[in-house]
Length: 315
Ligand code: TXA
Ligand code: MG
Image 1 (cartoon, helix red, strand yellow):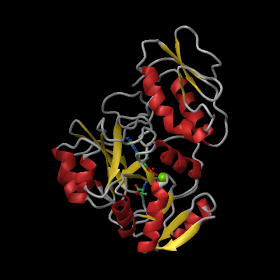
Image 2: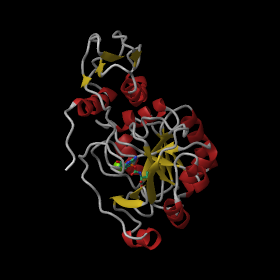
Image 3: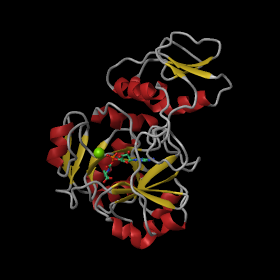
């Protein structure tokens, strides 16, 4: 059952209680409706993916109340601080180096060492950020493969029955997802065009580079890359070879286990932590148990297959 409540103090109180309990809530921002969940708990982030039915893990945008809160999660330089001061709150997302002590769940950044941050301008999302006092991961509130939702009815059509609550505050003003820019070593790259134009960014930050290929290996400055371990990865393993560090699942126990009980939400929440842990071991290879191809298992397997594929060479 999905409840729709008009924006009010009561609606925000209910949304706050659900978010604290790790459940996702749909709520408008000035761009599109977002499906918000606490970004500091892997299982809450996994619940967002489960509701959307997304067959892959992409890093999500983390929403915060203020630049001050954002600085607790990522490292800002003069340029990113200038952009934030001029354009926040608003439809601009900054991808910045993640602080190691940020407390952000690795599933929210899909294991990357960067984080996408935004201070939204909409009263409903701002009220929820204030009530929870938590960073909130929020992709657009639509099922995988459908278009972004700009009205509560769109969210209901797409996610009805799969989430507990939609906070309705009418149609969104912009109807288009935020502009995303990455800032790495003083180079500004446009990662997604959106409501904030390039000219507005140029005014503050000077010339900006155009989007890069999505298919390059992970290297400093390549903000679009996906995290993959640096070691060979063997899938569907029943047991570890002597040179392998085995990530278990269910009855395949391994050196560490994604979820001894075989729960896919728990496994998704721990996936990137255990891949990083495996990468840091002295053993030269990684193996991982079979993950069922259902529910969140689809997204986990998508990520594992990419991590196991031979590396592409940067051009
Ligand atoms: O307007 C918006 O931005 C909406 C509202 C709800 O705030 N949110 C939204 O989130 O569009 P989502 O998850 O649908 O889009 C996130 C985008 C993806 O294209 C993702 O690849 C990119 O942000 N992204 C997130 N973290 C990133 C990172 N660390 N590096 C590069 N790209 C990142
Ligand atoms: Mg989206």
